[in-house]
Image (tube, rainbow, N blue to C red; front, side, top):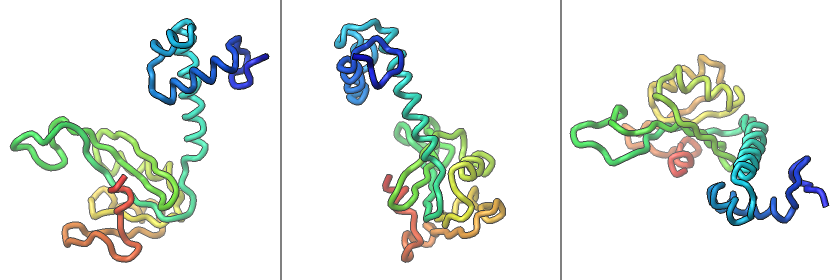
Length: 174
């Protein structure tokens, strides 16, 4: 029987499903090739095709349509180095996240949290009619100037973390 999952493949459906299972279990291609008795290059190629298909599906679903979106940035990495504080902490990687309430999340590793870095991401992922919730970080100041109609802020500095629907607890929790 021809493989119904991978066009033009000479690998059986059973072997392909095994490869897919190992991919989902995050077993690397080298070990997978040994387990399913295939050449490692073939397994690498199939793993890459699976990744490409996942990326295609994510890209087709990625723009957030109308709704409520929470935006926040965070820093991940090693423990804080003594004496270095704040956004410029050494060894930390900035990550920007967007959450459509009750639906999906989009995250991206960024170089820095400047407006010039964040705005293209927000414009590419969010519809202008969305309601946007952020904290008072200065990079979000220009959202209304970029055409977003509703922008609400949470003032963490005033100990405000939620005011009815005005919160970013979902993306912070993520």
